[in-house]
Length: 119
Image (cartoon, rainbow, N blue to C red; front, top):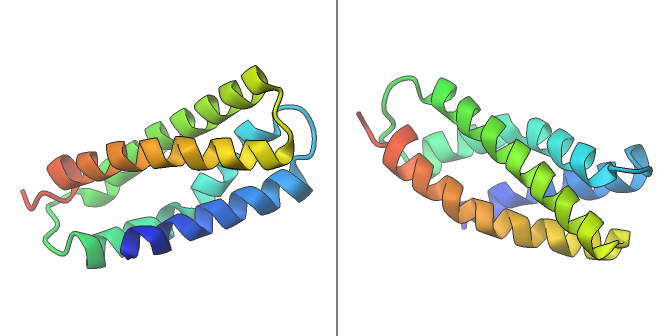
């Protein structure tokens, strides 16, 4: 349940940014990157206090590092797929969801084993 809740702000931000703020070339890259930045603190707090209640030290710095890597991967992979498929905005949104699902599994494992491992 918390993962479904934490996925909504970046997805909503992506849709709004892609439709209204970045309606030109490379909109997927900038919309994804901006959405990740907007939702990062929300996701950190949710994960820190609800998902992984036993957090180790320096979790903020580790989480920022993961967020930067994940944002870059999400933006680059989404942009690459959008370009490869010459995607419309509707397909672009579907591609973003698929990329985010793959990155969610990666991110969860990194958070569980390294960021919020209690050490």
